[in-house]
Image (tube, rainbow, N blue to C red):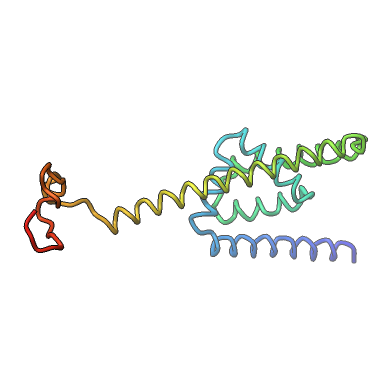
Amino acid sequence: MTLLALFGGLALLLYGVQLIGEGLQRAAGGQLRHLVTTMTRSRLTAVGSGALVTALTQSSSATTLLLIGFVSAGLVSFRQSLGVILGADIGTTFTVQLLAFNVQQFSLLLIGIGFAIGFFARRGRRDQRQAEQASERGSADRRAHPASTEDPGSNIALPGRSTPKGAESTSGIPG
């Protein structure tokens, strides 16, 4: 009976991995493919991304199963996945070490650092967004008022003339 439960559980696991792979193949647009390729470009970034994802999800098993889905979907090669798995193990070790240390002594300091990072990151994004909006307004103004193809000096008021060349006087008397 135990052997039957083992094979049944293994079959469910493999079926779930197959479903994840098929779903990722359908959903894998260019963005997901680019993100995964960027995260696994070198061994060091693969290890770092594996550690980061594991630290965020708190589960190296979830990271490994997602990675198996990526490999079966063709988003990541097996060679690239090895670095991510190593990073997942490092992320698990890091999480356990954080729990083992007495981090309560540094909690206010860590909260302050987190607040500062969030504050300055938002400020930087706001400044970037304002710069983008200003450049969009500038390009919209250039489209609304294109450069004149006339003689650039035609709108300059000459000495002794009350109106620029080509402009009409409101009094009807030539300038």
